[in-house]
Image (cartoon, rainbow, N blue to C red; front, side, top):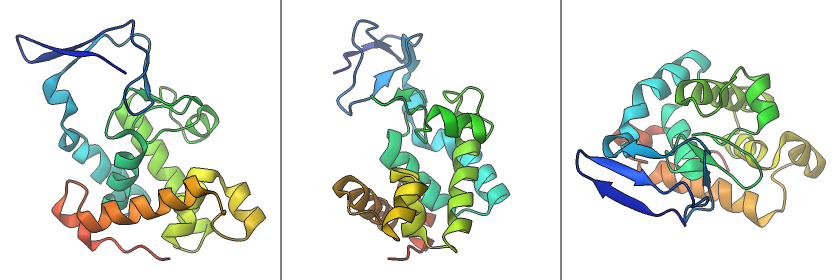
Length: 179
Protein backbone atom coordinates (compact mmCIF):
# COMPACT_ATOMS: atom_id res chain seq x y z
CA UNK A 1 0.00 0.00 0.00
CA UNK A 2 1.39 3.43 -0.90
CA UNK A 3 1.66 5.87 1.96
CA UNK A 4 0.81 9.42 0.97
CA UNK A 5 1.59 12.54 2.97
CA UNK A 6 0.15 15.93 2.02
CA UNK A 7 2.87 18.55 2.29
CA UNK A 8 2.49 22.32 2.31
CA UNK A 9 2.43 23.70 -1.21
CA UNK A 10 -0.13 21.16 -2.42
CA UNK A 11 2.29 18.28 -2.97
CA UNK A 12 1.81 14.63 -2.13
CA UNK A 13 4.92 12.77 -1.03
CA UNK A 14 4.98 9.15 -2.05
CA UNK A 15 7.30 7.15 0.16
CA UNK A 16 9.81 5.48 -2.16
CA UNK A 17 10.13 2.45 0.13
CA UNK A 18 6.53 1.48 -0.56
CA UNK A 19 6.18 -0.30 -3.89
CA UNK A 20 2.48 -1.04 -4.28
CA UNK A 21 -0.72 0.94 -3.97
CA UNK A 22 -4.06 -0.35 -2.76
CA UNK A 23 -4.93 -0.99 -6.42
CA UNK A 24 -2.07 -3.45 -6.81
CA UNK A 25 -0.02 -1.05 -8.92
CA UNK A 26 3.56 -0.12 -8.25
CA UNK A 27 4.80 3.38 -8.81
CA UNK A 28 7.56 3.87 -11.32
CA UNK A 29 10.86 3.57 -9.38
CA UNK A 30 11.98 7.15 -10.00
CA UNK A 31 8.72 8.72 -8.79
CA UNK A 32 8.88 10.31 -5.38
CA UNK A 33 6.19 12.97 -5.43
CA UNK A 34 3.24 14.30 -7.38
CA UNK A 35 1.39 17.60 -7.11
CA UNK A 36 -2.18 17.20 -5.87
CA UNK A 37 -3.54 18.83 -9.06
CA UNK A 38 -1.80 16.04 -10.97
CA UNK A 39 -4.34 13.57 -9.59
CA UNK A 40 -7.23 15.29 -11.44
CA UNK A 41 -8.34 13.04 -14.34
CA UNK A 42 -9.58 16.02 -16.36
CA UNK A 43 -5.98 17.09 -16.94
CA UNK A 44 -5.80 14.32 -19.57
CA UNK A 45 -8.94 15.43 -21.43
CA UNK A 46 -7.09 17.27 -24.22
CA UNK A 47 -4.78 14.30 -24.88
CA UNK A 48 -7.71 11.88 -24.84
CA UNK A 49 -9.81 14.04 -27.16
CA UNK A 50 -6.91 14.49 -29.60
CA UNK A 51 -6.05 10.78 -29.74
CA UNK A 52 -9.73 9.79 -29.92
CA UNK A 53 -10.34 12.13 -32.86
CA UNK A 54 -7.18 10.98 -34.66
CA UNK A 55 -8.01 7.27 -34.38
CA UNK A 56 -11.81 7.48 -34.48
CA UNK A 57 -12.46 6.04 -31.03
CA UNK A 58 -15.17 7.43 -28.74
CA UNK A 59 -13.46 9.47 -26.02
CA UNK A 60 -15.91 8.17 -23.39
CA UNK A 61 -14.73 4.64 -24.18
CA UNK A 62 -11.10 5.73 -23.83
CA UNK A 63 -11.80 7.40 -20.48
CA UNK A 64 -13.56 4.28 -19.24
CA UNK A 65 -10.60 2.10 -20.26
CA UNK A 66 -8.19 4.46 -18.49
CA UNK A 67 -10.36 4.50 -15.35
CA UNK A 68 -10.52 0.70 -15.31
CA UNK A 69 -6.86 0.19 -16.17
CA UNK A 70 -5.05 2.75 -14.01
CA UNK A 71 -7.59 5.01 -12.32
CA UNK A 72 -5.97 7.84 -14.27
CA UNK A 73 -2.56 7.22 -12.68
CA UNK A 74 0.00 7.85 -15.45
CA UNK A 75 2.72 6.23 -13.35
CA UNK A 76 0.93 2.95 -12.61
CA UNK A 77 2.89 -0.24 -13.21
CA UNK A 78 1.01 -3.52 -12.88
CA UNK A 79 2.52 -6.65 -11.32
CA UNK A 80 2.88 -8.12 -14.85
CA UNK A 81 4.62 -5.04 -16.24
CA UNK A 82 1.80 -3.10 -17.94
CA UNK A 83 2.55 0.61 -17.67
CA UNK A 84 0.90 4.00 -17.66
CA UNK A 85 -2.64 5.30 -18.07
CA UNK A 86 -3.81 2.62 -20.50
CA UNK A 87 -1.63 -0.11 -18.92
CA UNK A 88 0.28 -1.04 -22.06
CA UNK A 89 2.45 -4.12 -22.04
CA UNK A 90 6.00 -3.35 -23.27
CA UNK A 91 5.55 -5.13 -26.63
CA UNK A 92 2.30 -3.29 -27.41
CA UNK A 93 3.77 0.03 -26.23
CA UNK A 94 6.73 -0.33 -28.61
CA UNK A 95 4.61 -1.63 -31.49
CA UNK A 96 2.27 1.35 -31.25
CA UNK A 97 4.95 3.99 -30.75
CA UNK A 98 5.14 4.63 -27.01
CA UNK A 99 8.88 4.73 -26.37
CA UNK A 100 8.15 5.94 -22.83
CA UNK A 101 4.87 4.32 -21.73
CA UNK A 102 4.88 6.39 -18.52
CA UNK A 103 4.57 9.53 -20.65
CA UNK A 104 0.82 10.24 -20.63
CA UNK A 105 0.62 11.49 -24.21
CA UNK A 106 2.65 8.62 -25.69
CA UNK A 107 0.69 6.09 -23.65
CA UNK A 108 -2.74 7.42 -24.59
CA UNK A 109 -1.90 7.77 -28.29
CA UNK A 110 -0.48 4.23 -28.42
CA UNK A 111 -3.34 2.79 -26.37
CA UNK A 112 -6.04 4.49 -28.44
CA UNK A 113 -4.36 3.40 -31.69
CA UNK A 114 -4.28 -0.18 -30.37
CA UNK A 115 -7.93 0.04 -29.28
CA UNK A 116 -8.83 1.43 -32.72
CA UNK A 117 -7.11 -1.52 -34.39
CA UNK A 118 -9.03 -3.93 -32.16
CA UNK A 119 -12.31 -2.19 -33.00
CA UNK A 120 -11.47 -2.56 -36.70
CA UNK A 121 -10.55 -6.22 -36.21
CA UNK A 122 -13.89 -6.94 -34.54
CA UNK A 123 -16.00 -4.83 -36.94
CA UNK A 124 -16.77 -2.17 -34.34
CA UNK A 125 -17.90 -4.62 -31.66
CA UNK A 126 -16.80 -2.78 -28.53
CA UNK A 127 -17.22 -5.77 -26.21
CA UNK A 128 -14.99 -7.94 -28.40
CA UNK A 129 -12.42 -5.14 -28.69
CA UNK A 130 -12.37 -4.75 -24.91
CA UNK A 131 -11.96 -8.50 -24.47
CA UNK A 132 -9.03 -8.35 -26.91
CA UNK A 133 -7.55 -5.41 -25.01
CA UNK A 134 -7.79 -7.31 -21.72
CA UNK A 135 -7.09 -10.94 -22.64
CA UNK A 136 -5.36 -10.45 -25.98
CA UNK A 137 -6.61 -11.04 -29.51
CA UNK A 138 -5.29 -14.61 -29.47
CA UNK A 139 -7.65 -15.56 -26.62
CA UNK A 140 -10.61 -13.92 -28.39
CA UNK A 141 -9.77 -15.85 -31.56
CA UNK A 142 -9.30 -19.14 -29.70
CA UNK A 143 -12.71 -18.86 -28.01
CA UNK A 144 -14.39 -17.28 -31.04
CA UNK A 145 -15.67 -14.54 -28.81
CA UNK A 146 -15.18 -13.12 -25.35
CA UNK A 147 -13.04 -15.63 -23.45
CA UNK A 148 -14.73 -17.35 -20.50
CA UNK A 149 -12.22 -15.79 -18.12
CA UNK A 150 -13.85 -14.20 -15.07
CA UNK A 151 -11.40 -11.29 -15.24
CA UNK A 152 -12.11 -10.55 -18.90
CA UNK A 153 -15.89 -10.82 -18.60
CA UNK A 154 -15.76 -8.60 -15.52
CA UNK A 155 -13.53 -6.13 -17.35
CA UNK A 156 -15.97 -5.80 -20.25
CA UNK A 157 -18.89 -5.29 -17.83
CA UNK A 158 -16.88 -2.76 -15.82
CA UNK A 159 -16.15 -0.66 -18.91
CA UNK A 160 -19.82 -0.81 -19.94
CA UNK A 161 -20.84 0.33 -16.45
CA UNK A 162 -18.27 3.13 -16.39
CA UNK A 163 -19.56 4.45 -19.71
CA UNK A 164 -23.16 4.23 -18.48
CA UNK A 165 -22.21 6.10 -15.28
CA UNK A 166 -20.46 8.84 -17.19
CA UNK A 167 -16.77 8.30 -16.27
CA UNK A 168 -16.12 11.83 -15.10
CA UNK A 169 -17.58 13.24 -18.31
CA UNK A 170 -21.08 14.32 -19.24
CA UNK A 171 -20.48 13.12 -22.80
CA UNK A 172 -19.68 9.58 -21.67
CA UNK A 173 -23.34 8.60 -21.81
CA UNK A 174 -23.29 8.95 -25.60
CA UNK A 175 -20.98 5.96 -26.07
CA UNK A 176 -22.54 2.76 -27.30
CA UNK A 177 -21.34 -0.62 -26.21
CA UNK A 178 -22.34 -3.81 -28.03
CA UNK A 179 -22.83 -7.01 -26.09
